[in-house]
Amino acid sequence: MFKHEKLNLLIFIVLLLLQLLGVVGLLTRFHPFYLFIIVPLFFWGGIGTTLYLHRYLTHRGFEMPEWLKFILATGSAVVLAGDPVTWVGDHRYHHLKSDTDEDIHSPVHGFPYAHMMWLIRKPPEFRERSKRYAADVSKIWYCRLFERAGIYVLPHLAVATTLYFTLGLAGMLWCLYVPMLVIYNVTWSVNSICHMPRLGYRSFDTSDHSRNNFWIGVFGFGEGYHNNHHAQPRCAAHGLRWWEFDLTRYVIWMLEKCGLAWKVVWPAKESKNSDAVSAEGAALLLTSAKAKNSI
Image 1 (tube, rainbow, N blue to C red):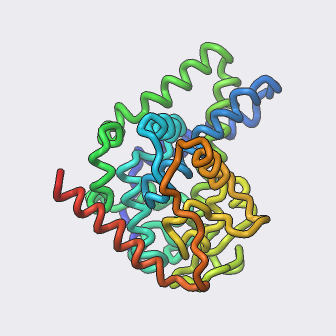
Image 2 (cartoon, helix red, strand yellow):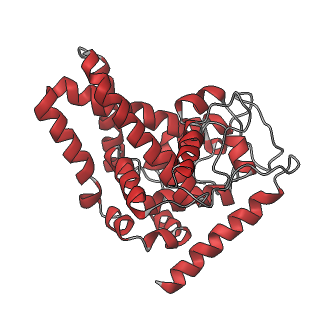
Image 3 (cartoon, one colour):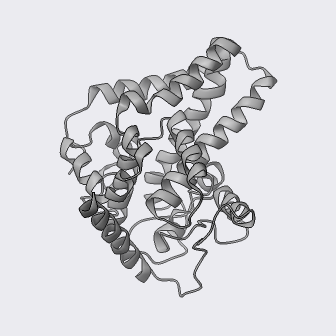
């Protein structure tokens, strides 16, 4: 349905360039000092994507203070994870149409499309559709600002410029673009690999093709336990077994203990079925629709 859409050349060039910068960074000389910047930036951008954009903003699995939301939203912007309104709308629609012909990033359209090409061949009208499913997000002032590309790139440019003038070209590449290379491809692997047969395991009998993949779970801050997520979308934890390492879950748990997260939706102890999926998805879309009508 989507893979034959016209190629968006500008987005293709930008995504290719960002990844090439990461690859070039891997070929430059590495200094151990870079780790003191790589680790915090990787964590900030990663958690900004998994904890803020996904588990909080898309699925409302918990609540947290406004100042913390803004910090995490800025972290996702530093790594150019995607403007919040579009990101949330696309993902909610994915849950609604998961692994059908209407799913915007499913392997039913082929692995390359599910992994990255959906970003490049997204139909022009799909953005407006996404905005309808994220009308509640559009009410947040900085999320509305981030819809404007010229404003959205400012946190990224500020960090890149600072790194360039303090650590030089190699330092900028290693500290910013190498982490972005990892964050991008691990995040995209959740859409592609975690929906492909024989590339993971299923703990729940959901109606889609979602699978849990341990390694994507580890490197993706817990996002790789995707079948668990599709079974209980609002759940703040994706890793449900003791060995399913879910860094985002542990961060949310620590925030809750510190009083910085509340109304946390922890794992339900129901039978292994996907009955809750459609109900939770409908609730999210209803919330979005109400928000749209109140704008």
